[in-house]
Length: 207
Image 1 (cartoon, helix red, strand yellow):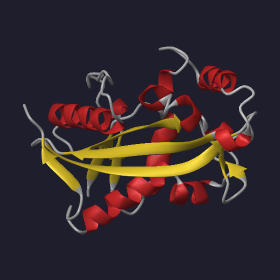
Image 2 (cartoon, rainbow, N blue to C red):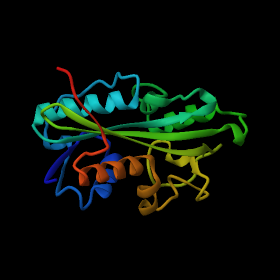
Image 3 (cartoon, helix red, strand yellow):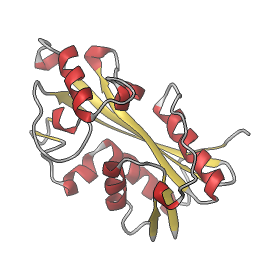
């Protein structure tokens, strides 16, 4: 694919997508390349609904293929929260530190065996003609009682991957890209592109 717009203003996500799409897409575009690109309200009930809404809106506006994702953390003890509200768990203008602090408060005193969680990522690839494909990746883990590591973003410092004994913040990028929820969804996308979309979830969006 020659050009692909990644519809995200999150620099951390843009960096990860750039790494993951190397060799698949010639040129990665960002919202900065389209200053008039309208923002889309993420008001869907699911990660998939939000991802498709963002990608489809941008594809129709720019006339380019667009990749968008919605991802978040689902904590079992909290009934799946923060879920689709992960980025604004502590409020609309919350920082990563604010969200992490609230999560730790809500899990205060909860033993490690009950701190299970999973990162989810749904990636949507939409074309200007309204056709969309979605890819769902998931990674289970455990929420620590205190942050560890300096890398990554979001809830990465609190999310322990038991298989490696490290948090997302501590894992090297080359490992994180392979095992992460986003990496797994992206691998599904790569395989679908190689098969020209065969086996992917595809639909025509309604006007």
